[in-house]
Length: 140
Image 1 (cartoon, helix red, strand yellow):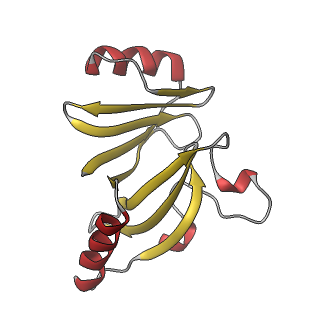
Image 2 (cartoon, one colour; image 1 turned 30 degrees about the vertical axis):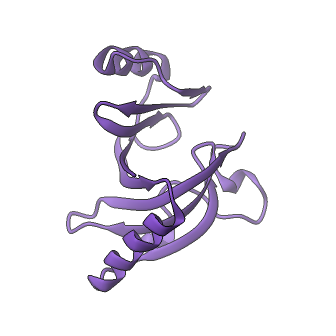
Image 3 (spheres, helix red, strand yellow; image 1 turned 180 degrees about the horizontal axis):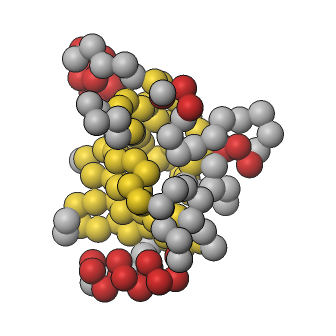
């Protein structure tokens, strides 16, 4: 099953949590000092906010549940001859995930990913010798 992902940078996490909780009529599933995430079924979306990225839209994505869905999605992007950056397994947004990135024609970064587990780090750069998130510099 695929779930749309949206990540937005905010200035005030508490005020933004209040706003989006009212908008979605749901509390966030995960909250940290700098991050909150809603996993909504109606609409089917993974909506995240954080104070660690620039204000406004940071990136979009498609989250999948199965390895086969991720490979199928990656295959479609490559078959369309899009410039895909295969980040592989990384830590981002308090989760360990397998990711690939592509930019749309407007320059908006999109990630195709499968999350494997929750972790206590916002991103891998907090661990020496690992890459940063959310949108990798190699993606242009």
